[in-house]
Image (tube, rainbow, N blue to C red; front, side):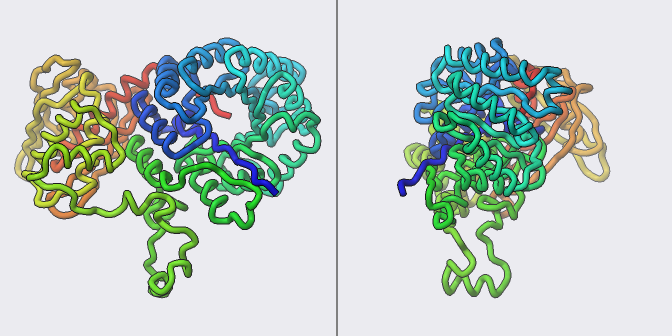
Length: 518
């Protein structure tokens, strides 16, 4: 029997990004999209074009730079949404419009206030209109699992006749049990007369921790596309974790022997790592596939078994997901290293930077090498991320001075360059060095009464007393909860950079005004 491909529809940049604390700027979406392209995902849902100017621009920019993956925009079953999606996708070599409308009785009655016939008519009209912009149209029946089966069959048949090439079956609220969800896919195959003209897709949420299990059950029953996100991020408890679905199909090929994916699994760990760096939210240590403990063995009997033969306790190899390349803290460069060696190392770490950026980073690297006895891969990566994460034109640190101790009142002075204009120095007293520093930043940016620090974390990313520190701040700017990150040997400076990173994201995100999920 010839194997059939399971298409991976990655919605990290859309459904994943809608989760609190996971918002991304346009530049961050582009970086993540390029990594998803390296990963080999078939479709990248880059956003929801009608949601905001920022989302429209991000989709448009992703459509310009990604060549090998299909670029998709979500759109409600409204002509205005679909038209904006079509315009945002214009530069894409491969484009898809993903339109949706709710089909469950509870959604139709209370959210849409529409009859089933009205919903069906709207769905068909939306698909036909979307085909004016692309032949590749996907239709989703929001809350499909809780929908009346006969109505679901009817609307799928109608949208396929209207030109939808993919029909998506979401478990929008994560209510399904794997056996039930698999049966739904089988019922769709058996009761939609023209189903052979479309690919069956699934979009599972993880409210009961069953998103991956439901997706795999659907594949076994004939679904050939899965909506998923890197690290399983998404609304509420998240979506099906892409890495778990892909590796389950790969490791258990004996069970799923009728299907395959074209994902480059060696890019799974780098993709997970990049998303963590961009969003500032790390996966729990025991997370399947990409967690820090996924390949760790502490119990003596486990260690003995792994040393004797790896397969005693490991069903996959770390290098299968790209962990061997990115893990470890190998000494790489020193203060005598030249520009060429530095540029080569940056490229080995997966970053493609301009000559101007390399030149700026090389100066910072030399300064770091003078301060540290040993320079690790993570140190260089921190320099790169610090450069990429800061909107230099918006707000840049000129200098800071902090006075603290157990016999003095903590005092901080900061001076910034805001949109290329130097501010006056601002000096503020506070309850501690971080408190007064953040207050001084608030005064310098004229937002002292408009933000609230929700969470503050600092960790060393390398080893020794001269390790680079990573500061992660979660800040509420007038209702917008934003995560910022910064890196420096000095934790106060790292905190300042994290604050400015969060502030630049806030400025970008204030354009957003609509949030929809399926």
